[in-house]
Image 1 (tube, rainbow, N blue to C red):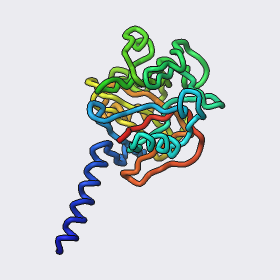
Image 2 (image 1 turned 120 degrees about the vertical axis):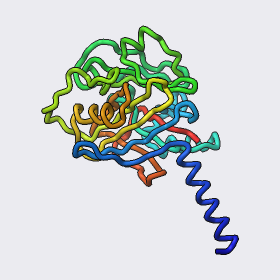
Image 3 (image 1 turned 30 degrees about the vertical axis):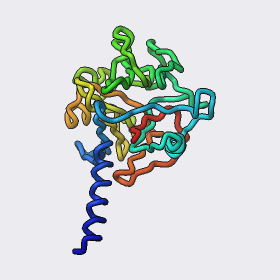
Image 4 (image 1 turned 180 degrees about the vertical axis):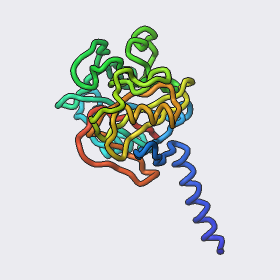
Length: 246
């Protein structure tokens, strides 16, 4: 093996190592269903929420549009996922904070649809950590989130499934969400690769990932950008997007 080939291999391995450092993705099977999970070290990596291009700009709506915005900072997306429910104009349904600016207040009351299936919750990104809070706890604790998005329902609350999930439910969709560890250092993003129920997805987080808090983001419109595993989902224009920046 010549030195040129060795150098090229070393460079390729270095690039792979850098990608793995930002976010680690893999497929997992659990009780007959398939999921893709992407784990982020919240203490080390930069996570952000993206909605519009600037305060008064157009809604970004697509992963490539977020990546284009980051080019101005000489940065790029290492991972992204849709991050919460949105209205027809793609405005966030619930609480939304981006770069410390609140664009939508907290919605604490029950309501129609999955979002209003209490308890729902908030995904909060702070300095060197990320956490899923049940909404009432979020209001009580008032964490200083640089980025926050509210969605619902909660999938897992303190290690227990949402109390209204039914084991024999027939409501199946491609679904996605996020789970966090107690110390706020692990953020694991989950998307199902086939249609699943809330009960099945919550059970996967609780029993396979063994994480204590998890929040549902959406169903049917669920999309993921994970270049490390060659995945870039196309489809619906999105509202809020969560991304890992490098």
